[in-house]
Image (tube, helix red, strand yellow):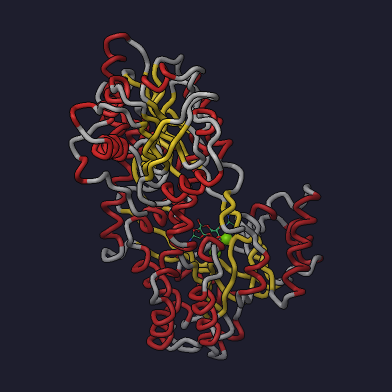
Length: 571
Ligand code: C2E
Ligand code: MG
Ligand code: MG
């Protein structure tokens, strides 16, 4: 995500100076957000107004009788137009005063003209000065205060907290899955999402709570002088709740949750950097515990972070050191024919032992290693499968990073060629996260793979968007129903109805269905009765190493192994 830099010319200007300026200037200055609601104003505006001026009041409440032609002009200024001179009336019956309306970060500013202007400046210079003060501390995209304002406020709060033993709470907020939205729906949508997200954060705040955009999809809120942890927990709860509903952007519902890390000063740190670090560690713990939740910092989280850092460092070497390997889990056509295997990646860490993919793949993705690892997985799986009877397929999971790399189809074609395996023996599993939008690119990639003869399955169906438009627009061969619906199949009528409907829907579209995570004979019986095409799960067979898979095949396909129907008789 593109960061919004502070204007370089304003680098010496600080939030404190803007606050100081607004408190002391004799000018009548006010700032409004995109909805023309008051965000800041000078003390002079408050004292010269005949009614209470509060943050959130509309421009029409501050200035009376603003005619609609002016609103159009304000709109132009809001969208980057040049400053305009207008006549505005502060209270009914009073004479209109001329004012300059200028663009500010994600909103507009108004300064009323006076006969004498402070410091001998002209009105234009004064307006420029005010605009720079505002821009330097605000994020142009969301209108929230930026990192500069944040650091200052946090420092102030902590030094006050230090002396008075008053608690400052810092909430670090990070949007879940924002990167996927930005990568797949484009930066325009990403920007709109950030604006809407900032709005939801702003709406959740109460008095004495201040929100900031720190970078990309990172936001923060500072609370000072409130009873803690109760107030921070209350705010975190309302923020998480506020992110449960989808953001509707260009008619597409986009689900983006929020994870929150909370730290308290002076309890966890007395310096800004350390408090931010503590909140960040808590945020990481929240992400790790399934996202969409909040966690308060505690010292044991440091251990978790250290482990992750160690993992990150050793993961870079894991591939070349031969520590990554694949296990293969049978895919069964009822009642009992093994038709292929799904390749599942594992990492044999020299000290930690076997690490499951859910732990290290996200790290590999974040570090840009997944493209290379993914390529290795496809090749390794094909090399293994070529030793099996030629009727057996191998399924490989693709991560979004591979799909987005731009070279997937070439890589796959090269591997098939080099290994000499029939294309229809390779199946690629993708999840819906990869397909957030039906971009031409996505459809092209899938169609090219399809033309090559490779099968494509939609993994974990039912857990994410489960958008039916994917089924209409993408050439899937198989749909894999997530274990979530299989787990309680024997007792839960709703799961039964959902699974039955998915099977009917897929079959109606000519797509076959695999049930994942089948663990009991009862689940298998029910699925077979409902015409589910393939079963996968511990009941049918756990993932096995390469050699154990060969033994399994010798037992399950003795005829084919004996008659040499492997594509390449390497064993
Ligand atoms: P997945 O593709 O949905 O794989 C199925 C997961 O369910 C595997 O976990 C498998 O071991 C587990 N499983 C299978 N049957 C049962 C069962 O009866 N009960 C239970 N409780 N679990 C069962 P695993 O191997 O930990 O993989 C987790 C996820 O990691 C995979 O989910 C897949 O999304 C990802 N993954 C695995 N290997 C790769 C890979 O090579 N590349 C990429 N990009 N992702 C991979
Ligand atoms: Mg899979
Ligand atoms: Mg799955």
